[in-house]
Amino acid sequence: EELVDFDAAARSFQYRIIESPAPVVDYVSTIQVLETAAGCTVTWSSQFNVTPGTPEADAKRLISTVYRAGLDNLASVIG
Image 1 (tube, helix red, strand yellow):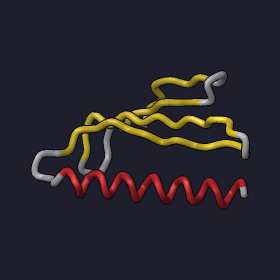
Image 2 (cartoon, rainbow, N blue to C red; image 1 turned 45 degrees about the horizontal axis):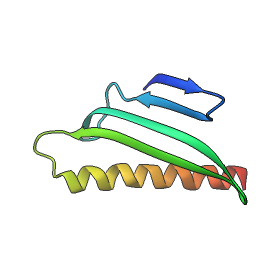
Image 3 (cartoon, rainbow, N blue to C red; image 1 turned 120 degrees about the vertical axis):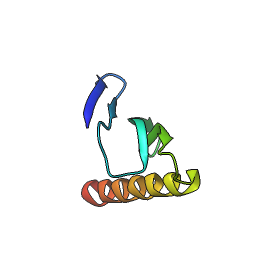
Image 4 (tube, rainbow, N blue to C red; image 1 turned 180 degrees about the vertical axis):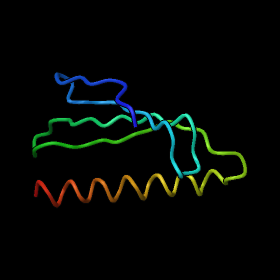
């Protein structure tokens, strides 16, 4: 992974994956913390291309599973 951008004021950062066993290429992801009335919300989004031969739905499901695990872990750490 490589940090692409960090913006403390916007509470966000962007990174790209240089090499991965995941069936995606040109992966760039953004994580941002947004203040809400109840506390905060973390958004994690990405853009990527699917490796040839991999069904797009499979790649999206894998990335979604990684996001869910990461966000669940974050919630367990900060309560």
